[in-house]
Image (cartoon, rainbow, N blue to C red; front, side, top):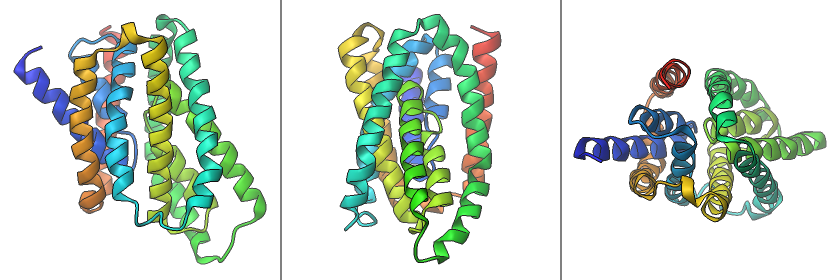
Length: 256
């Protein structure tokens, strides 16, 4: 691996850690970069997932103040993310690599759609934040959504955070910054559980150098995202994510 490749992976990891902490979809930066550098799709996904755990740790810690006093809510949602991530990671391990290569372009399209509609979902949900409480069925629907998001994230992590934020902001009356804190913790659980499964059952697919480089970059990015990332224009971030996602689809479909 050349120096330029090392720097590219570090930069991608830092960018992904920052984006994940703010809006999600950081995988749409790191995954295409790894594909561009010639890493196989399945190995790139597994190594990327393990590396991004570090960014989830620093990003979640950065939102600790927003989560003060919200342990009850987290205790209710965390097991759902855990179960969902196990199911998603198991599907990734059971299905053949060829299936992953065929499915990923569609998943990236889904992720890009979520990136595009995320602001609309959040704007719609913002109206509910003026109410003092939400209907009881909203909590049940949030639980189902967290489980599904965990399955999606365990299989392929791109835009998991966008999915969660769209769900939370549309159905919850809590402040958006607190919802972002929930999103960071739940995404961390999904990535961590999936990473453990990959280490146990798919060690031959892990490129530890790539995982380490992404981890270093993502950890720094998580700190940046929690401290100053809110100042980055959301439109610019989403535009970058969409551009890189389109490049990834082109690379997968036509050049691999």
